[in-house]
Amino acid sequence: MRFLIRSALRQGTLCGREEDCPDRVFRCRQCGYSQPGELDACPACGAGWKAIDVSHGPACPKHLVEEAFETPNGILVRRCFRLLNAKSIGLAITLADITEEELRVMESIEAEKQEQAAGEDRDAKSFQELLLRKLSRR
Image (tube, rainbow, N blue to C red; front, side, top):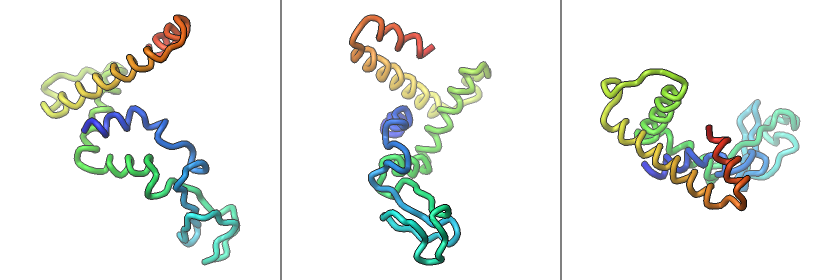
């Protein structure tokens, strides 16, 4: 569970854009042909370069995390992030609205967020940088 929470909080740093992914896959939108090497045109159907999409490959960390979020634990973590987001925009949520398991996961999410923020604060090189980081979290 902790892996999923940490991965969700650091999702932006797992892998960059599809074009920069070390395990990228080139796929034809017309016929579905795919290969890891760059395609100028589809060898299967002859479609031009405009029909070629680039996506994260099966061994990409971002892709692996997305797959993990399709498991029962991943669905639970995703739901808890949505509940916390709903709470932050003003939706009233009571203990009667959530399960004990959801409460524990939400507590873990908040603890991980605080731990991550504390780590970022320790890395600040000046008081001004620390202040800017704290203000940006609000």
